[in-house]
Image (cartoon, rainbow over all chains, first blue to last red; front, side, top):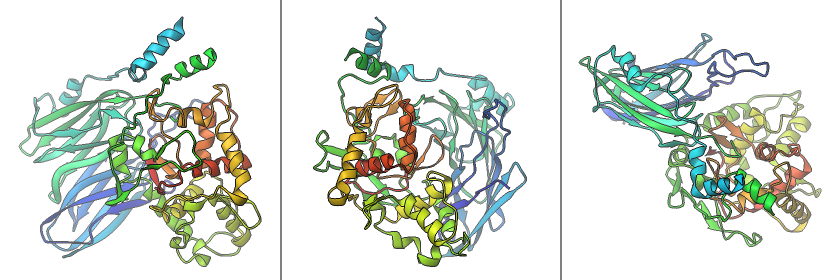
Length: 109
Length: 138
Length: 279
């Protein structure tokens, strides 16, 4: 598991049925690109989060394939439609096999 | 004497231009777009790409894409060691086919966005982002 | 004189400063609350009429990153600092929260630091944190600019966000303030430059492709796009000295503490923006 990885998401607590909301997601991760060299001149191997998925009540909102050109501390902002009360599930997949997740509930206004 | 020429350059503001990392391109913008579309033409409209004209720092460059009706949008950086940046696959739960993120750019280059639409057609747009060498602070 | 002109020209600076502030007309709001980013300079500043937050010198895109706490990448480190605040560390079996109910008890602290304590010593926030750790928690000192310290100093600083910087320069602080002022105007290093050469004589100009600020520290610890993490005051002082090819003072040294006091006083009147976003 990469060290010090922590997600941070902005999700409204309530919404009306069918409302479109903007979500913001951030996660602390070095995103080692595989391009950098250490002090001996050896390439530091790539170690990034390679996929991010956001789903609401099991329905995919966005599924992002990520490559090393995504900046350190990956940030994504996107829109979701909220048809009914439920839960957002955010998942990040690390090259090293770790999976980071966080969930946020949304109630009907 | 060299100092005079440098003085003029500095005053003329050419200092900024002379510190731009020369434009780099690993593969041409068109080749990269064709790589995503499989050779099919990409419409010039139907997709918007927002990127700064001059990136304050190539390490973290905010960009946004918007392609109403797209199934997926792929971002490429023509001058990076590896051109691929990300692909956003939009699901039924998406409220729009738009996304904002922050990317790394190795130097001045074209940032490209290619949208695959629901009917199998493509749209593409590219923007040149200038990436500078910093000053004392970085 | 000619030597200095050559050095200035090589550094890409304009001989006669024409001050341009990129974001002069932009208004900083954080979570929609307005922030003051320029005010009349404090009385003790002889050569500057108006002081500007570092925010005003950044591009529109960088400025936007500070305006919402979910856009601001620093906050993921603030969240981690909250976890640290609540985690037991050291032989006494305590966490910060064991004595300090919540980070909110630190409201107002950052706005008046560094300050002279009852024993006449100039103290800074990292020292207060390490004193607590070593003397009351039985824990090890943190590195001055390490991730944990930067996060916790950021968390403490956040509690003063929006408050006006008000650092004491007279009375017991005055001798250290004078020392800091002397350091600010002292030329050092192979490039033979002082803090003032850039941040007082040339703010608003371009140094190569970087837009020079006044070097205010009201937003520190700051998230820099350049290294994608929180940067501390002494960490930046050290970096600046290395850029001038001088041997830097040590983080936590009397010199940097005196300099921190002086530089903080140059921003008296601006608002604390911790944790800010800069290039």
